[in-house]
Image (cartoon, rainbow, N blue to C red):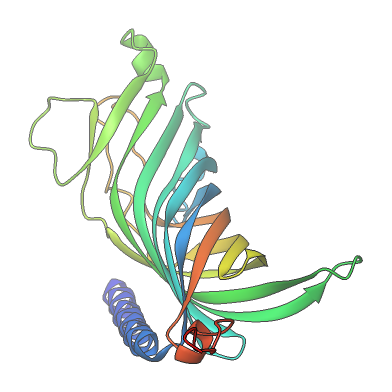
Length: 280
């Protein structure tokens, strides 16, 4: 049974890699032939949580979402008419808050640092307000590739209180613990730092000035990769608590995006310029 599950997970991973590779090739080909290209930045708040797939963990603790932020660069190009393809390079904060059920003093808040690279197809529509002012709105969807950079947290527990420690701040390191020193370092082993998921969202697009765009973007991220196992993470202290990384990251984010638009079409670039010879 375990071998079949492992084979299915490996097959899913291969399919995801092929899909993302195909989209990246399509994006590169499209960018070389696109006549309208948009470049800019985005930032905003986000709410993330960890969907635990470990039934043995449910009686131990409750997992709650945490607030964070994200920021990065955006590249988009027009594919055809109202269709756009864009990619982003985003630093994002993900994580969770763990509240104990067996240990009423247990409270573990951890923030994970990620580099997200989503590739999304967008479809734009025209809208109109009551005062006849026009705007555009859009929907988008596509795969997301995320790389786990590291993280940090702070934990409280009954075991720490018994050792006269009110709280313990720690940093995350990947690998097997080499010794029994440095309790402020949480070693995590056998995890998948490269993770895949799906982004679904939409938003509003405004044009404050020619060739400049402002987008108010909403995004829902559904993690596909199970990032670890129940034994992946273990604290040196508290010794009576073991976190479970058998689960997936999920979250919602709200972004403010500012884009500059460029055109590779000579007619579009010369639009509005005078064709009269000044020498007359």
